Image (cartoon, rainbow, N blue to C red; front, side, top):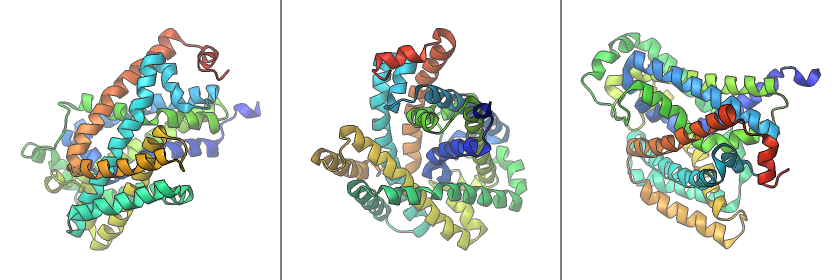
Length: 371
């Protein structure tokens, strides 16, 4: 039947929507890649990539397909489907709290970018990002967010081009990377590449579960499209991360202790590349910061015009400024592992619900009043 045929355009849209969510400043900066991939050397980072790609593909396909079947009005309720009422409710609240800390992480990234590249006080970058994100969230400039949000594909493309050029300019650097890593220390919370790969997949799933359920409910029209879209988004993103990883490994002796390693790599290729990429990075920080701030405030009040919502936005901005005083690399090493541990619980819940309990969609929808 026609409706069961693979729709390539729809599959690409689904995969692209996932990539748009996960491609932000943490990816573009290279700090996330440095801690989770490059620090484990050539073969270790390849192992991380294989584990991460497998996990991404699995949870993308499963959550998108579940979202397609259930078509939830409140997509965050999907946590209760996988984890039950109590753990599910905890994750419903943990997610916006975690996203607030990601907002503070973005403020820190803005400070690091201004300090490392422009050579100015990092607080200038922090204040500019706070004012821009606060104004957007208070004024409800959703169209502006959508327009600027389209920078994500260009960020992905830009990072890949820069990384490929860096590899081409110094392929010997990759061959020497493992030896250099014996003499320097890359900040990481994980003792081996297996754990790093597991945690890289786990930290992402925490924030993306409701989003993927929404994609499944609104976009995927059949199982083939959900499967192809989930696989395309997962493999494409992890593939881009691996290209960035080898670009960093080619320069590991110079970038191992930097807050924004990809910016250094871009600047080494050409000052013009560096300038263009610094602008792209600031836009990536902005497009990540705004939805994080909005989601945190929206959990306090869904009415964008209410005093409660405005107060939440102002408080988030103030606390975000102070939280953003921590170094970007330190915040990545603290916030993402915490999210990763919760992600492990979510993985266990998904596995138990889908393959052991085999929970019925209809039964769950009745318990939340959507059937």
